[in-house]
Length: 181
Image (tube, rainbow, N blue to C red; front, side, top):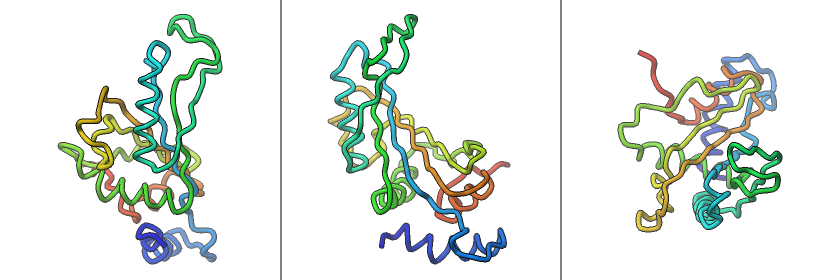
């Protein structure tokens, strides 16, 4: 088991059972998958940029990304149906745990002037979305290898039934949420 999974079993499950009055440990919300994606608007004109972004995602997640394509043509964006416009990776199980452990313990503290992540990015179904502005904060990316900076989107999908349950789960797992003053 990973360090992240151990923290879930030893800290999060008992605390969530007590706070939300769960009678069974299977009722406790858990993280089911992590989706890391990057939309690349420049990929329409420059396909090499999309390859660089895909390589970055592969280095960061340890898994080969899938290329996403446009479903509709939008003339004002010079976008045609079927154009490659981004990449995405879905992590589950041990890989998701390792990625989240790295994100919480190494990547987020490396952000300059970091004051915590937003506590308002929850949806009604108990999922959390986090935008990362630049890929250079990941330790797998060497500064010399960065061509054009780009951002990443991290979506954490849980079995929580509300944003409050998800926030409590992620707080117990060590996510540094911004403190409202």
